[in-house]
Length: 290
Image (cartoon, rainbow, N blue to C red):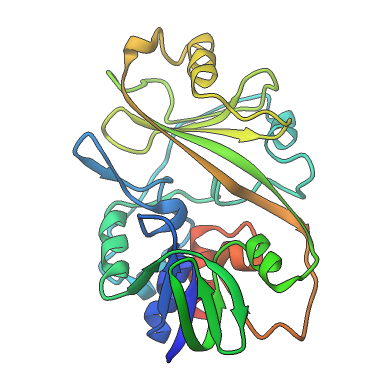
């Protein structure tokens, strides 16, 4: 019998598993959730820019973190419409998107590797939870405790819990250009006619993250995003792009109404488990206090 079973192999799930010695259930091939690393033309990069707004939480779990404070040049268009473009029903734009302070973790992929080492992982997803046993698409596991850091919506479906949870998806493009943009490091565009809202370049190489949010019922399209980047003068043509990676995140921005249910014995931690738009710092803190 496993003492702890952790649903979800993102940052919070891995930290929780390391703390408890638990077994992780994760269906994706890569660990790290939103920040899972990928090989981008021999450069290993995290799925999102590894920004933190203070050093405390990360250094607590990864003492050898190489943290550099950035002072990026930010160019802003039409910020008064930015929230309605990203999440009209949200109280505010999530802090993880653009933090108040730009502390960049230069060796973040090393942190991911360190965090994943020694973690026992079952590749799959839960389909039913019974008393002291969890059934997955790969078999069943006995447990004394379940900690959910995965999708709260999916857990609700298993438990029959009714909550009004909503989310906004996002398309994140990683682009490698032929040359680095000279007049800004971060571009924020609130114009409703432009698919993307943020273009973020934090590396010395001409490598950029481009965010587009799924707000008005139509999925962002890679070709349309590239066309809008051309129209905005960021690139002159598709030939300016050496390589591109596209990733769609369904539960990108989270909101809605949760309920307190004293009958639920499962611990819920992390961004998805608590259904909160946590920053990286907050996700780490949630796992440490779980």
